[in-house]
Length: 456
Ligand SMILES: Cc1cc2nc3c(=O)[nH]c(=O)nc-3n(C[C@H](O)[C@H](O)[C@H](O)COP(=O)(O)O)c2cc1C
Image (cartoon, rainbow, N blue to C red; front, side):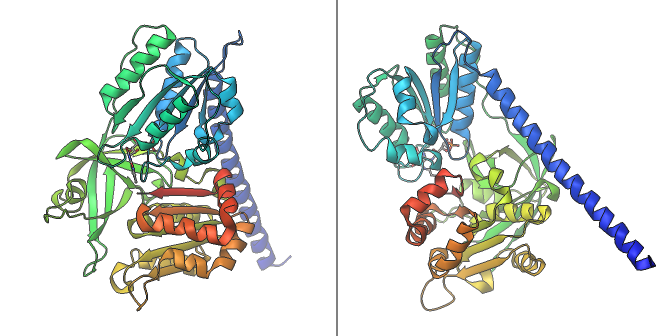
């Protein structure tokens, strides 16, 4: 064996060992998660006497309703009431026929629409009256009264249950932005039903202090509103999050209404990155939260922030699949965190379809995106600038143009992640996908967890 053969052997051995260590790491982390899930389920297992579990269904986009559903289950469990917690889309008509008591914790999106993980339930079960006279139910409706259809889906669900003959255990409760009084009313009803004394209030979400470490305008001279890249450092606790997660920020001028932003970085960056567009109201004044983050707070200022796990938009089971990442404007934030995670994990089957106005001013993170293309982290990138040519083109037009590619990526088991504006983009993308793979195809993607959205 000559010298270069020995070197090759050493390098090959190191690569094999590194690969085995990586596989081992993934295996251990998956095993930890599985064990935690089993522990959660075991803690809430039905009582041995065969008592009928209460069904607790949640409809949740960004996790608040899901979290409250689990809190509800834990509280009932403590009182000796067995429960079964599940997303609305996983509830069948048989589940409802076999349950005597069901509690629903549901949020609302769009124009009074259900969150994605309830859309199948809404289209398949709620499209007709069912025979549910045996069922007793309670509904906690999460929403935001700034929207025209406040708690719209909660109300639609309540009236469908009533029309189907189910009996309300109490009036459905509307919680405006997680309002503590409404949550207390819900807890009070639960205690009463479970036959326990009122339990202590659930804690209002706690915020941590973060330092605004850097801020940069990404689109000087843009025809659109200024958009900023922000970097924040945790002052107190160690920060834990995953690609796809969100933050909630409290602006000093409005401590009642936190604003949500998608995180644009991964923990390995050491900082939470945000992509924030500066909003201006019609009278020319700055938006409360975006004005605070992009202008009034000085670099070095303390920001009240909390990280929110966004289970619907994390990679989860999709981490081994090819990804089609679609978005516009500040939606690039959520896609960037995924691309960073993919680059760190050596996953190269990624296709970015991103839209903004003009290449000259609005190509956020251009160098990074080009570098990902050169390094092969992005197998394909279609950056669409709507106003760089006579005829406006958008991400949905690009998808239609690339229909064959979309079909071939989906045939290779790809998952689709959409981040950005609800108005125009999200609906346009869904219509394009429906044209390309049919409505049954889209439904199947949703059912398989391969169509995830973080839209606002
Ligand atoms: C893009 C977007 C659209 C929303 N649309 C509505 C709406 O039409 N009506 C409403 O009451 N609340 C609306 N909300 C507020 C959510 O329902 C509310 O924040 C809820 O607590 C989210 O719960 P979740 O984390 O379980 O999804 C909207 C929130 C966002 C971000």
